[in-house]
Length: 380
Ligand SMILES: Cc1ncc(COP(=O)(O)O)c(C=O)c1O
Image (cartoon, rainbow, N blue to C red; front, side, top):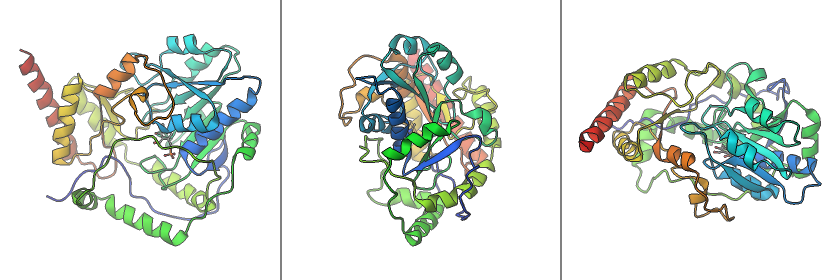
């Protein structure tokens, strides 16, 4: 069998239309070259609003994509890490209130695989402090009801690979307050050139590879490994290329028509194993992949290994917390973040795209069931 189920990535059609400024209404839109640049711009806005603060700090989770650190470094703000509340991907509210000081210019609230942060609760902690809430929604996009999905003062999106609106590049800052976005112009240079011909070829090749057979062949190419998440510096922030803007409307429509029945199937099958989808039970959540906390790291690793052998598209995301990345060029300290570490060790994410079949889900559940049983029998 040559076919394999990929972890992430929907085939999509490229349709051009003039950019619709109301696409993200009621939010105003500012396009950037990437999600990292969008976050950096949002941080620069937060910093500018508090120009009286000498050593601006930003609170953010201890477990997330290292691109968030790149954005902080380029924006000139100091990241302060926060642990999660137990068994969740939400920052601990106690720790947030403990570490939020007069020089905290922003809190980065990260939407994890489609699970939004608890922004209302975070906001109520702040009382009337002047700290901005930046909602990093690179991994989350609503299929309906944009009005109520995002609650941050600034919201950042990514249109990079594997994201809900993946278009290979681009990102955006959104805000209900147009005047906040107007401050950003000074921080952005003009967009890089994009050859439309090579972009269209890239799209065709991507659609070919994002099929069970295409992905199966890709993974069999010698030397083809899908490596670990690494730190990438952000050199500068640019406006989005206008061509990407012209593909956005169709991309949003494609996303809105995504299959949803797989979610219910996963939910049912995981419940039979006494497991659940992380953050499940909220009708507004639009998962990018299915995140599940397995009982411990060795069961998680064994499941990953088996699913990888069969080609079932499971991943462990970042595998470690930010203080464990050797390539991050600033000192994040060596304090423990026990709940974030447990999440990094126990998390498995299962695919949720157009080619996942019921049989794939059955096979994934069989692997999990066998590994949990195996661990129990070894314990005895
Ligand atoms: C939470 C989060 N923020 C920001 C980014 C950066 O987005 P981009 O790859 O478009 O720069 C990512 C990318 O994976 C992400 O997962």
